[in-house]
Length: 196
Image 1 (cartoon, rainbow, N blue to C red):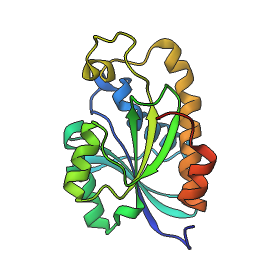
Image 2 (image 1 turned 30 degrees about the horizontal axis):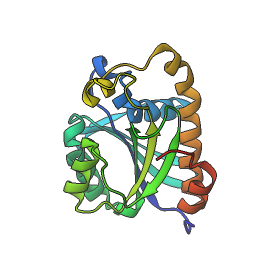
Image 3 (image 1 turned 135 degrees about the horizontal axis):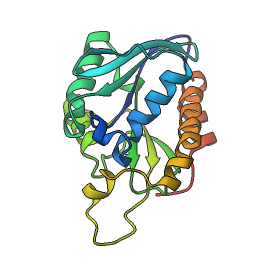
């Protein structure tokens, strides 16, 4: 359980640019944009190869970060901000798309492999550890077995999926807030859902 206030970094993974804005791969960006709007704190700054915000949330100092390096080089931006603000890996939370979970299913984990996710692979490599917290946001697998994974995650969510996304993002952000207030174990017990 967190003792007193500390500094956290919440990273949403995605690709910069309007053409990617509603891709499945960009659900991390979508979650942070939703959070910034809900907290009425949308004054994103451009630095550390990213867009970032500093805010007070759940009694903690929290940085929100959207790396602008494109997904495969996400670790560069993350490590730059962490080093500058002296944030330890144990206080890093990464929100990302997860094809091994059904749509709108959430799983919170720490110190796990990248599972084929190139953004996570780069964070692991640049950070030198996998010992940080991941919020795996389910986007499901391709309906057609022949479709390449990269093509699937770079597609926009379907209309039906988009209808459900705001509620899923709200649940995810409630889970992050629970973690900040009460710790990883409580958040995992309350919010982890069925899936791989």
